Length: 246
Image 1 (cartoon, rainbow, N blue to C red):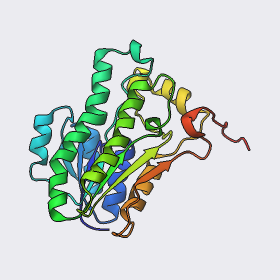
Image 2: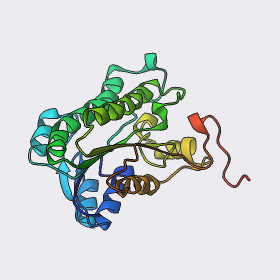
Image 3: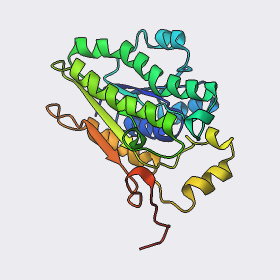
């Protein structure tokens, strides 16, 4: 697998795992994330090019992507700023989830898709969530943004019909990342206990493997939707088997 790729939310978790997979396969990767030592370290490790951009800053995003014409676009960035009933969330908590999980995705697509369509080829991967198709308690706002990603992917696939550009949504179940850290008040121990200690989760590299599998499909075929669940998670996240249980 060759060519160039742009990965958003690249500095940690699923995004970092995707960067590692793609660079290992010989792809030239631009890793977009908020400026941080984590992003710098990842790029030093992998040879990726850092694009330190806050996705909520649309002017900065437009400037960073003006000359960017990747063969592969991975829209991965996402946040869970809070868990709770929608009516208990603050304005900022809702605005941040919508801005990063949806608005920034639309703007990134707006800036990159015309170049792919003109070239007649390209791969777009949207990292969604099973929360986009199945309700979870205290996750209505996040689920709404991921349901919008599902609709967005299906819509742009129609928009791009005949161009040769492929669109894939990868929808993970529970993955052991730090996406819920902000919602846990920055308490890693509490997040680990609540989400991962007694429940087997997928790992970021599992999702990266699914992304690469979609990209390696023959050009005549498009893996349009891939759901990746922990073996011990049921749909909707209602039931978990304890670790070690048969």
